Image (tube, rainbow, N blue to C red; front, side):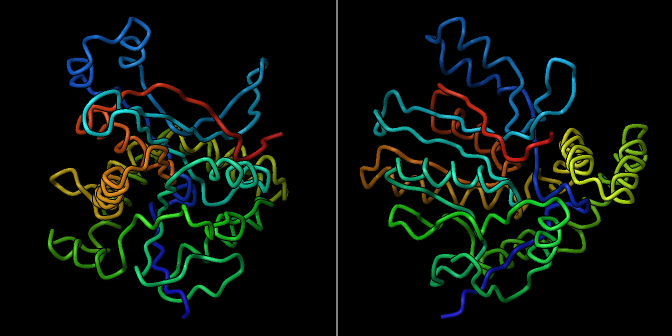
Length: 308
């Protein structure tokens, strides 16, 4: 069976392929976890981000990093279980994907994102990917320009612990229709947010730097400019939401992922991970604390792009 994948542009800028978000921990989490120690309380008040540009002692960009954050269920029906949120960038270094493949072996259930038919086979490296695929074409071009690798060509989705946890193309379209939304409206909202960033002083500087890097065919410089643009992703992601603060592309796909998570927990799985684009993880982080009373315990970073 040919796999039919429905991949979608996330924002109107190229850097929307690798979304980054940051926001305060919700106040309700602190109220629900009054027995947390001072370190945990302080952590809950800090901003959290799942993607960052790491810099050296001189302030020079060193690497683009994505996070792995753990959330433990310390009481209730899921006591003793945990779920790791593993941030993904869809174009990265081979070493980054190799490290992920090794880590994926340690989970009972690996929940992954891919808007595809539920009956489709798991993606295989180099497999034909039909259907509406503008993002796939863009990503292929991006990996060549940045001299990186494509996620679907590097991640091994074949192990039995990999569980599809995303919408089908039909589900996606039905959800948008039910909320009276559409690609044109979503694109317009994203365009408005993108233009606001583009017209800012920083946005103008980034455009000039990107043009210079392209003309000079300087791969590292281009990576650095694109990585730096992640600091502007908050407003662009917010621009995707409708008047109710929801979007099929982000919040409702996350809802689908959590329904699969609930099923896996009910089946007795203890070591879970959700492997989704970094832009999805802030919403997931907030839901795990607010709706599932999970406690964030560990946070680490993996290098996705070398910037030197």
